[in-house]
Amino acid sequence: MSRKPFIPDANSGPAPEPAAADELDAAVHQILQKLKEGKAVRLPGLGTLRPGPEKSVLLEILRAPAQRGASHGGKKSGRR
Image (cartoon, rainbow, N blue to C red; front, side, top):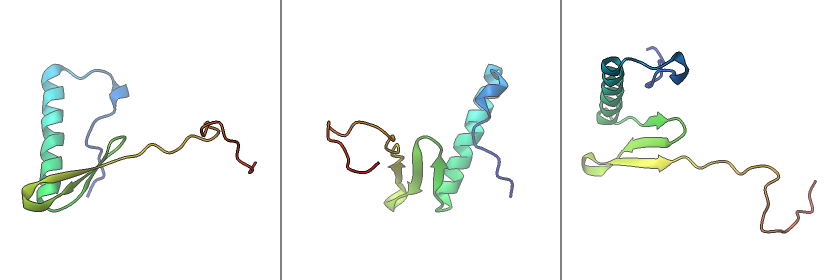
C-alpha cells in the first residue's frame, strides 16, 4: 500500500478550485473509510482521530512539546 499523504503539498502552488474540492473530498473519504474500518487516522499538526463507541469519533489532540530554555515561572533550574 502506498503511503501517500492525505493532503497534497501546499508548496506546489494553488490548485484550481474544482481540483482542490476533489482533493478535499478524496481526503475526507479516505479518513472516513479508515475510521469505519476501526483504524486510527493521524492528522499531522493536529492529533489523531480514533473510532469511538456507537459510531462516534474521538480526537486525541497533539500537545506541543515544551520549548527548551522557556521560562518556568521565574524559577531557575539547578541543572545546566
